[in-house]
Length: 346
Image (cartoon, rainbow, N blue to C red; front, side, top):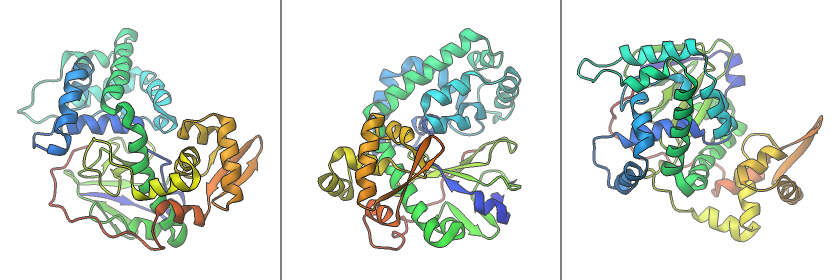
């Protein structure tokens, strides 16, 4: 069992990530590829990724086994700023960390597993050509695994993040943590999760970053190194059927008809407080277009904007949160009950 210990300061510093983390999604989708159980919902996706991404998978799968430990350097905090920022952090990992984490990958393996691939051992040396190949493999895999589905993945994660942000705004962090359902159990001041190893994570005033994930569908996952910024990745709610992009919801369609597709995308892209340039990046529009749409949304009372130094920061109002949620005030129905899954060790 994983036990995360909070203080009052940790509760004040706990937040939900603004959107999907591209490198966490890469790593967790690699887990999905290696599942032995047949899942019709992802059978076609797996076939296509194995067919098109053969070269990248040859380099990535040795670093991300189906179960057990995988290196923390593959999911850096900088990935929250976008794939390229995260990739730069991966390729800038100090050689000492590469050596230690690949070494742990070699030792934290069941006896019946094959030894660590020589390619993975070469990553530990941190040579520029090897890291360049790793970066190319991650870029290639991301394209084949996500393709044009990233906006739909973002939409599912954003729906989860929006509801949790509203719950936190209305009832505080305690209420938000208490609403996670079967994956996490909030027993103040401890958050518990089923885990294959017995582990205690003491936040020590650092707070916790909660990252909703499309591809995390079994149990929450945390970083192996407790000295890194505390992070917990959990399945986005409602659970998606698999890597096949989920269909647009009725709320999405209504928003598009009400606001127009681009303005609806801008509203849906607005996570926790962000600047105009960040909003433009999330929505895939120019900065000037994001500014114009934000002005209209602000006039409609759906967002608020405040200038801080040279930047304008935008955030959703309660009306905007309720509109995106597409439901009357109150939490959504609980997710379906699931049997206890096989857990991944971190």
